[in-house]
Image 1 (cartoon, rainbow, N blue to C red):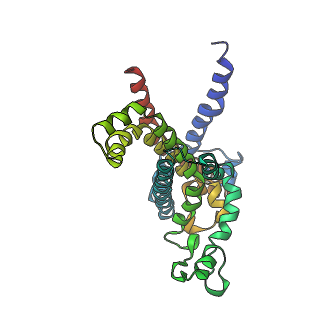
Image 2 (image 1 turned 90 degrees about the horizontal axis):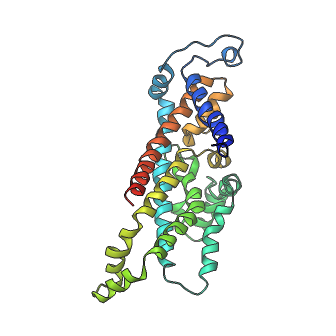
Image 3 (image 1 turned 90 degrees about the vertical axis):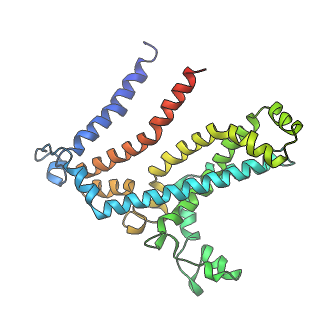
Length: 290
């Protein structure tokens, strides 16, 4: 206890303590400069801020954007990462080079890659096109030109593409470790039973990867719920088409609406908890059965 007590104190104060302060703030009327700066006392209003936010069309738009971003990000990263890992399952010449190339985007921050992808996803078309739109025009695929993140309905899906580019290599590493973790005896037994290579993967190897898939879902899923820096690097906080709850926190705080900002933060915490807690429970039960 003496050894871990400093960590427990820091965790209690700066994690759970600040979560409690945030929840308390979200249940007050601290939504103007006078109250937020302490010149006037705050009043307890219960869940009033949460009800108002959930009924607000702008915040509903942010939640819808977050859901769309999560679907595209999750689906793209899992699909690309899984295919790369499948292709690298059998050792090939230069495998280390391929792994390094696929994993390199992870070494780049979302802010740095966002600056580059802002140019790649430029919405200009025709003679003024640049980035991907210019590339499409040069190769005769001008019909693929589109406004990307400027699109009011699907703009957030375009911003998910850089996220897929950055995290697909990480998902590949997870699945590749899963592939390499399947005992060779299982593969040989399947081949001796006359299974084709496809059936060997379909009925023997792929089912062994379910824990890896769950881990990837949890890791990528909670990252997508908290997306912030990538959006601000490509678009900005005032762009309605790419607004998500994490951006709302910045906007509310900047306008001294501290209670609303705290409420949005608490909602995000609950969404992440809904994703993480079942995974932790499942892991704990699996360890008990060993």
